[in-house]
Length: 226
Image (cartoon, rainbow, N blue to C red):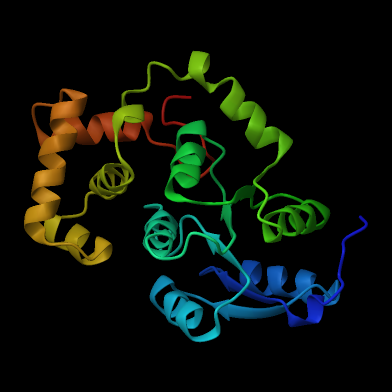
């Protein structure tokens, strides 16, 4: 692939993923290619501590770590509040254009699907570590054609926090549990839910849940009715 590995042994890469197979697999690919020393973390809180302690040159983070609520987005947004430069490569099972856009808006440098081959993973890593954006051809095509294909999706109007909250609501979780998982107050969850209802025209929580199930991507990146 012609990767420039000069000085690569000094590169520190932080990989955050709660699936040991993915975590160890990414680390092994990078280390066997003599590209970087991989730091591994199975959680967002620990990942942030490792970031503060080791100042990695590149961060690779699972978008849906721990739950299906796109928790990786919160990590990216939090990091970008005080670090605009460290490249972030998002790994995800979601190919939905709405989710991809949210990740890029949050500050991700690149977006790679988890089923990508090792060669593409290395290509994406090489690209983002130089500060260049990376989207696979498949992901770029999804975004390019999304305006006409998904223009009717009402969730396009939601913010990242609203999207995370709605995702948890669709799982039937209470406001208290949502507050704990997103590290926000109960009142914030209630206010956010009210805002979501207003944006989506939902008159009740059950109606909101039906909209979420209908329009949110499932594990395969496809919406409920597709």
